[in-house]
Image (cartoon, rainbow, N blue to C red; front, side, top):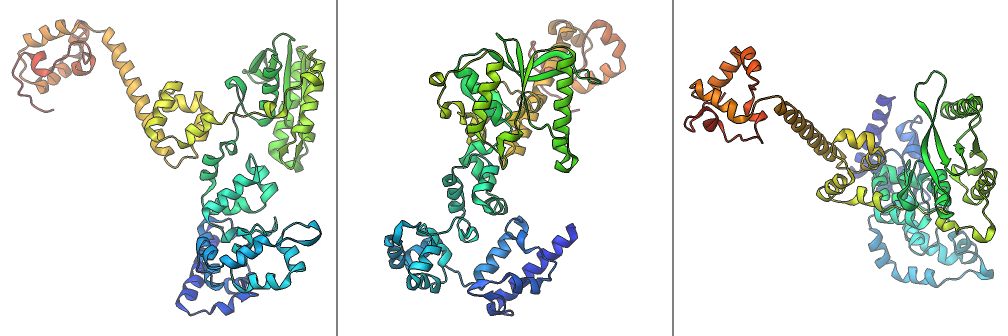
Length: 479
């Protein structure tokens, strides 16, 4: 499979080179002013997956360059705006009859002459985009600049990749192919999933948990998140962890992601369903009061429907004795509030300031970052300099562990003055002779509680150098 992809990339680059050199005429690949997929497929071999050209980073730039060459596009978006300023102004002032939407389709029906003028420029996609006449599903993303693609995401009002896919179709493919996903997440931190920071600094794993947590905070109901029930699932020594626990009511709450264990829906959903069933059995067997809410019907095309979800939460909480009247119901924008301040810092701070921020948070090594700040680590992995950050924390962790080891060992040995007196009685000339003596007299030094690596053990306990320790001049022989 990998070899086939490489062969396809080689063929595409070969055709691009032939078009650039004039060996292949653009007319051989063009149809109605556009690069023809059928003609290109014939040149490449019909097994080539043309539909993936806009999402595969390794060939995207070559395909885009070929498309621009064949279609004669050699102006930047800014140049198009300047060169066709009069036409763009005319389009901006054009209004469709009967209050129809301003789209290129409506323009084609109502003012064919103006529409044809735009087509004759050869830059119709760019002009329609600049004048806001692009149909929602006909935006030529491949013609847009990087900045315009990111602006499209911001204007879409999507808060995650699933919503963007539902709203903008293939836009995510172009972002991935141009390696712009990281930039989008820096601009819109909510696109970083798997952890959400809500009111009062509570962190959650999903949007559904965020909304429930925020609602409980707003109605001032005491709760614990990710709390141990004290009982274990069969064949598992670890205690069962509940999503929420209402302290005053004595109820555990579980937000179930799936109850359907149909294998046709995928192994991941089957695993979720099996886990939900195991939890239910444990709660019933141990007579633990709990309430569960199935989230399957509340999701629409992979996106949580808050308008359906919040009423279901109110019904669930009412069963636990938490009643929320309509006039006391918090606003939806407060219930769905997400604090992205920390994500922005993790994604955008320079390394020096980022290291200070993480140190203040309590990160003192790579293991601490990965095990106790896993959500931070997940977010940092979207940075291009993540490997540098990880290496710095590895060095900090090693240095911290090393210092602790030497401090622990220093307690086991005699004071520096006692060790120095013994060393000076031996009349050793340099550290080389000292190490040779230490190697030959391990048992004796152990009985005297004097270390061989005196420079490490007494580093902060009076050590001034080998000349002071051995009682001779500063002339030292390297080991």
